[in-house]
Image (cartoon, rainbow, N blue to C red; front, side, top):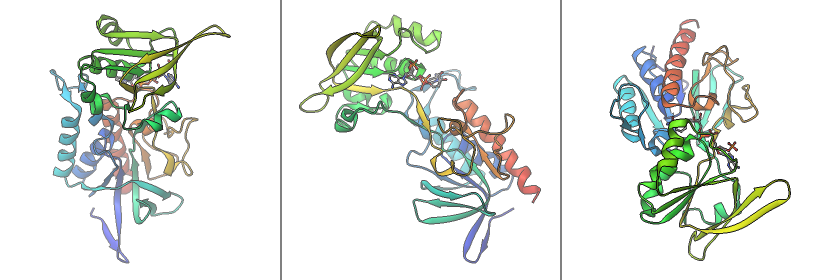
Length: 318
Ligand code: NDP
C-alpha cells in the first residue's frame, strides 16, 4: 500500500505527526504493516523524553535507559521499517474533508487518508513576566538540559508532582542547594519519589510557598516568595538562587486539531472507548496529547501501537 502522487501532490496513506514514543511506535507498526507511513517530528525530535533523566520504568531495561538514547533507537527502528521521517510543525488542518488536509510550517500542504496525532504535551510556565524577562538567563523548564550550568550553585524548582521531584533530585546531584517550592502543604508525587526528596541532604521543601517574581541584575539572582497562612496572613521573603526551574505540568499540543475534535477543558483530545479512535473516522490520537492521566513513555508507545493497528484496519475498509 504505497503512497500515490495525484496531480503532483503526494497522497499519504498514513500520516503521523509527532516524534515521541507514540509517534515512533505508530511508525514502526505502520511501517511493518506496509502502510508507508510519513512522520513529521516537531521542534524537539524525540519529544519530552529527550529532556528527562534515566528512565527506570520503561520495561526491558533493568538498568534504566537514557531518554535520548531510547528515542534515538525508536526513531531508527521506525526508519528500518520504512517510515519516511521529516521535520516540521503542524500549523493548520482541515479534517472535515477526505483526504484529510494538514499544513506544515504554514506552507506545505499534505493530503492523507489517515492521520495519527501524537504531538505530545508542552511544559507549563507560571505566567510571570519575569519568566520571559529572564528566559535563557536562569529560567528553565528542563533540568536535564540546563542543570549543568548550576553546578555547586543554588536553584529552585516549582511544583510538587513527580516531575518536580525528579527535576529536584537531578539538580541535587549537581547544585549545592535545591529549594522545592510547593504551593500546597503536601507533595502530589508518589511515595518513592517523596522518600527520595526528604532523604536528600541538599533539598529543602518550602511548602505553601508561591513564587511571585524574580530579581537580579545579570540574570536570576533570587526569587520573591509569598507564604500564605490562612486568608489574610502572608509572609514575603526573598530567596537568593541562581536558577529557577518550572515543573508544574503540561499543556497538550492539540491546538491545530481542536476545531475538528472533541477535547477536554485543558485541550486533551478525547478518544472513544479506550481506543485511539476519535469521532472522526481515519483520525486517531495517541500519547500525551490524548492522555491527561497516565502520561508515561510506555503508555504513549502502547497508544501509538494501537493507533497504527486502527489506521491499518480503517485503510483496509476503504
Ligand atoms: P502534576 O500535574 O502531577 O503536578 C503538577 C504540580 O505542579 C503539582 O504539585 C501542582 O500543584 C503544581 N502546580 C501546578 N500549577 C501550579 C502553579 N501555577 N503554581 C504552583 N504550583 C503549580 O504534573 P507532573 O508533570 O509532575 O506529572 C504529570 C504526570 O506524569 C503524573 O501522572 C506523574 O505521576 C507522571 N510522572 C511520572 C514520573 C515517573 O514515574 N518517573 C516522572 C514524571 C511524571 P497542586 O498539587 O497544588 O495542584
